[in-house]
Length: 429
Ligand SMILES: *Cc1c(COP(=O)(O)O)cnc(C)c1O
Image (cartoon, rainbow, N blue to C red; front, side, top):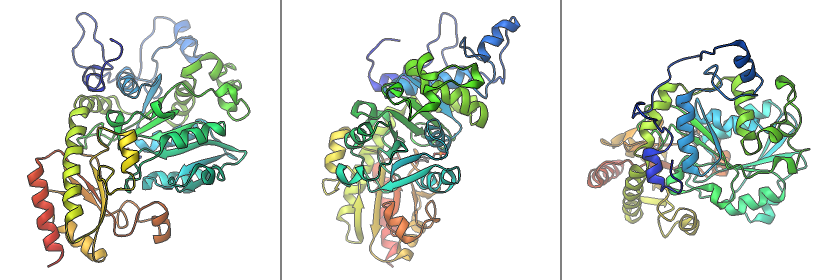
């Protein structure tokens, strides 16, 4: 593969590189296992002495090829697919944290991530401090403890649309000797490559724009290879001390820049088994082939819808990074000059019922528990994805009770605008 190809070219041609006479399209290796000539060859795989496939719970060639495409798009050194975005978030933390550890996370989080961190991982003994990502660095620094092992945040938060100051978070993390993990689901590497601004690990829910067609749930973890684990061996014993389950290998020594992903594959996939099915990886790859085209259209449409909403008398507020009025406009310009994403957060004047009447009146735009899809869709987080949070927790997550998450699709703009217009009218009848 030629170096320095543009992101759009990598979307189409990254990953699968057929040799002479091989299929043009990525094959689906629909096989749980792989055959070897002798026992010795298989033994070496189990010792991580040789690389190769032996069981799809750990690795599968279709998955690895698609992970490689995402890795190229993000500009990383190693990547793996997971069964879902949730599995990617979980693995990204659990690969370097265990009971007794602590993580600093932006409070502007996807509802599922917030639950994973503050309920499920807390039960496993990992503590999270959720911080307001807009606070100055000196304030954020107060959240760190001796046992802090990572910092986590979303490039563009779901659903509130908070845009992360990646450099502020990266330098803060690095000053405390820990990596910055960024959930880049909404921006996608087409619009933002967090590694260029100091992030160390990127995760994705590939279920969203990457798949783009609401066909397959999936996740991905990409490592920049930039974080020096061995500089902080006391913080990261899992990477810097021997793993008895593989004859005492030390990941950071043996695998260098591939250590983090190798460990997540060899230990977490082995024990927790959250592999993406090769069939889903194939669908994901099809989605990726048009990601650059779709993101452009999502952003164009969303910009126009956000501008329409902003001047509508019934709209109380709109948050979209592309609007000059957004408090995140400067950050959007810096980190995502070509556009942010297709998701707009806004509130209608009135009460909860007004929001519900608006959504129920939409015809083209549908109510679904999904976002970042080719088809326009809406959701009311306070009634749906974030309904486990009380009003106080909602506000801390940047989700006001009236927030409508409008995921603008790639249909023709006049049809989307007409639907929004008639639904707003009906909401006030
Ligand atoms: C949807 C989503 C997730 C979770 O991904 P799943 O694929 O649904 O498990 C994580 N982060 C963000 C930003 C999301 O939008």
